[in-house]
Length: 137
Image (cartoon, rainbow, N blue to C red; front, side, top):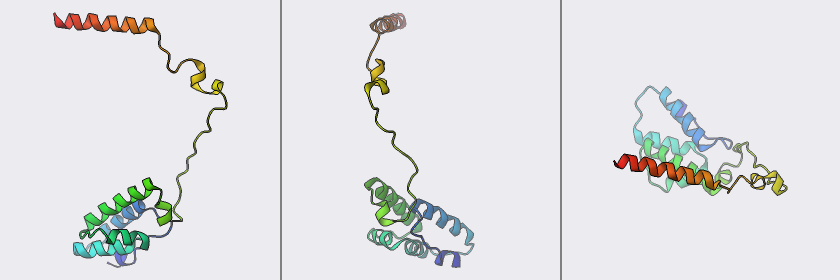
């Protein structure tokens, strides 16, 4: 039980990682713990700003609490408020490629995007008509 009472989210832990660790700790506890107590312990283990949002929802079971935390993780991430709630959380490592410097650097400049060969289109349409007329017989 001490595993759960001393478990707390840090300012560098994403909610989804915290949920995963909570579940790992929970599996280590071999005694019966009432579901409402588990829900309360999980809520208390979150950062205070997240705990406030969780408390507003009125969830009572551990399963509901975890589902709500996953939902909040999604909402915070999509709205851009995740790093306001968890200021020191690691940010994703990706970069956006720079835009092309000229038309010659992009695919649009090579004449391939947006062009079609009318011969191949007509041939494909003719083949499709032949197949459908054969299937109709």
